[in-house]
Length: 281
Length: 260
Image (cartoon, rainbow over all chains, first blue to last red; front, side, top):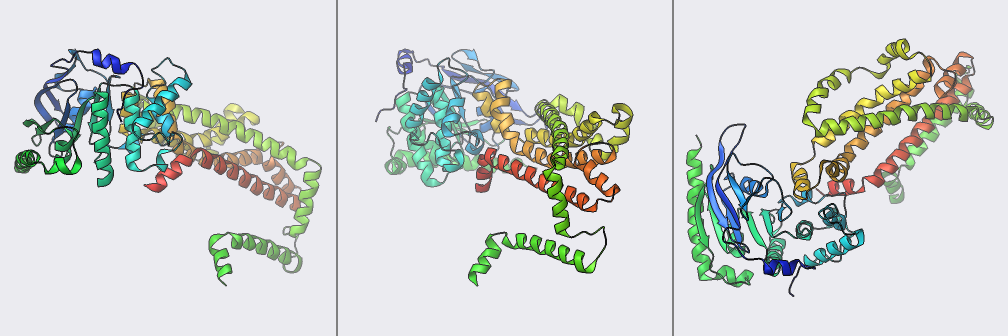
């Protein structure tokens, strides 16, 4: 089944010219005001439109902070984030953030439908019925078409995170910034959501930046994996994943190219963790 | 056997029976053991109660108490929730008012009475302000601590969804803090009744506090007990109404926190 945005956006997206530096971070640095230490420094990379990029690294390397800054939720102490040549200073509708803690980011006092509506009702000038239809269509997109009137507490963790994804998609972003979105889920749900995300990515022509600490998840999903060093984080490795889409949970994960890359990144990651430990006084 | 066990474990039948037994013991002791006018039999109290309900006296006083209680309590909710939301959300306001709140909060409600008599007099207004002052702090405190404990991720969510400050209050701050706001309101509901009765006992010409104390002073002892029973019933009904409303509004909260 081909997933499509339920409106004219599909056409708009196809007529847009891909740019080389669609989304770029330039010499980014974040120091914490409290202790002056840098979470990361001198981070520069750019992402092409339609890319699926995974950011991985040991915990505390600042990858999550980096994603927050890229979304405009917080500010860097140096450097800048550019989207289509414009600096990103605050959250914008074309870049949606998906949080790890779905129990928080999905409001427990709202039904599934009201949660998704929250993203569009103040922005769009359309009538209530029209907006509800739009939201229902996006719920269909993530496989929750039958649950609009459920409350989050009636849903599993995987379904709650689907609500968060539907809410983000209903705003019709071109970029999804995802901060360990599946790490709180059990293994079976994670696999399901990974495949759902890949389908959405290719059908809706999204650009995705995906932070994870799970190397296998990064390699399975992304076209490109950026590895961060331990604190303060810098880019330690940047690899292209030469595996065809659609990817398959069993076949892809046993592909020799996958295993080779996995070993390279794993060695590097262990080295980063060791170096990080040596740093601790 | 097992039926009795399950009645004891799963229902509060035993609690109701205990109350009935205590009342029966009261009745027995008043007739056979303690023959004094200050300890009338329950049946005599009930007669007095029926008389005073029938001629509308108790209803008149009940309405008077309810009216001043709700006026003070309602004002406390408006002020406490309003100021609490602002203090919880805007850090400078919190820093400005929190120390003052901490200094004023330990003052027991009745201690305001002498000051109020000087400034507001001894009329209706004094009692309303007394109830307001005593009910304010639990609501205020619970409201701002409820707002301050809202998770960062929820505020970040509101920002990524492009909500304005006003929309954030409506969609996030008020619902997220509502379990704690309601806790404060429940505490203050009990306090407001206490202060209403106290105010009426000190100086008043109506209300259940006035009725009860007047009955005692004029040696209408059964009437005095009837007033106290009415208060118990009134407080109980108020609390049940509040709990029913809370359960309805906070279903999402009980269900989601029960799961985690």
